[in-house]
Length: 275
Image (tube, helix red, strand yellow):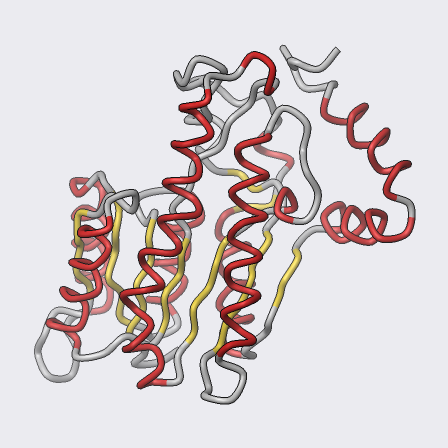
């Protein structure tokens, strides 16, 4: 990772923030992207104090205010990265939102918002980073979820967006099989982060709290470390947590049994919309 130039979306909190810090600790330079530029600048200040400038005197960390649902923002993000650093070696498509509601009760604008952020954000950023990644034989990472392998009840929009990212990146890998582009699909499983606090409910408002015990989940820092290792080893796919791996396996060999197990597991959440 030493000397690599990385762009990380959703870098203001959770897995994105942990990834930025992990990459910096590994010797990479980072472009931090998110809507909350104040939080980004706080992180940039901390990183600059800890790691200093690049060998050529340029700042090794910059913040770019980016709403990944806006195509021009994604184009600007990559242009700013190349303008400052001269190249892009790694793109981590991490920006995302979640939801929790039964589809029968759901305002369709919620699914549109999830697709715009999770799927189209990945497509836009990858499109405008791709020419530079091809020059460096670099890496594009898509942070999905076990919901990108198996649909989760009360998460129709979330699962649909993660399945879409999987299909997009899986195809991209095959298209560039012979020109050195590294594509990694990264599925962390349940991770301690703020994504459940900001998850949307049926009417599109944020639920404002988590229905899960965050302290029992894998930390964002552990997830970021495993992502960095996957990039260095140029892995095609990483599924974290035993539950995640078991879910993917069971979906292949006994999918109807998994349906029942999954339903019963998810309905135990506090205030679950499942009955």
